[in-house]
Image 1: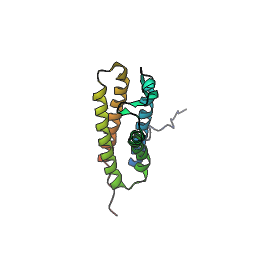
Image 2: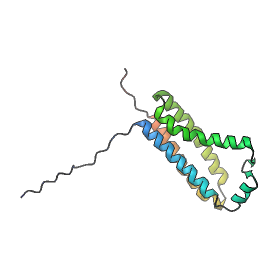
Image 3: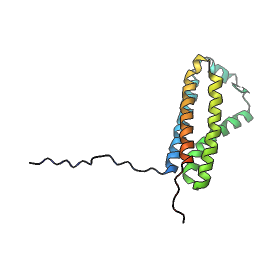
Image 4: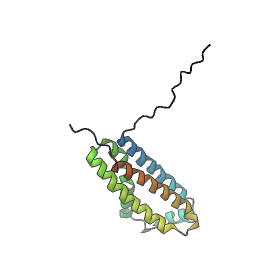
Length: 148
């Protein structure tokens, strides 16, 4: 009796549309933001400063909350925009936005060096930098199709 294997020799690796890749990278980034901010609530004095309406940028104000909101709304919208925008706009919006936010991550890393309780925050921002690098790389190498 012959025992013939019906399994394929290798796994199928499906091509994933660049728009889907970018959307998933932005979604991953949002999870990193959420967890980093959640863990930051567990650092000494953080809750007390929140109760006293203090932020790293000074006293909490409606205007400051709007600025913080806008900073987080943009990456959240990039999940949606990465799927629905046209290729040309999509490519450049992803490149510019990822570069700007990577710059912010670098500033956050530098400003948190030396604070023992912020080591986890540096780790999160290093992973965020990796995601930004992947976004920039994917957008930069956007596949070109046949001209219509």
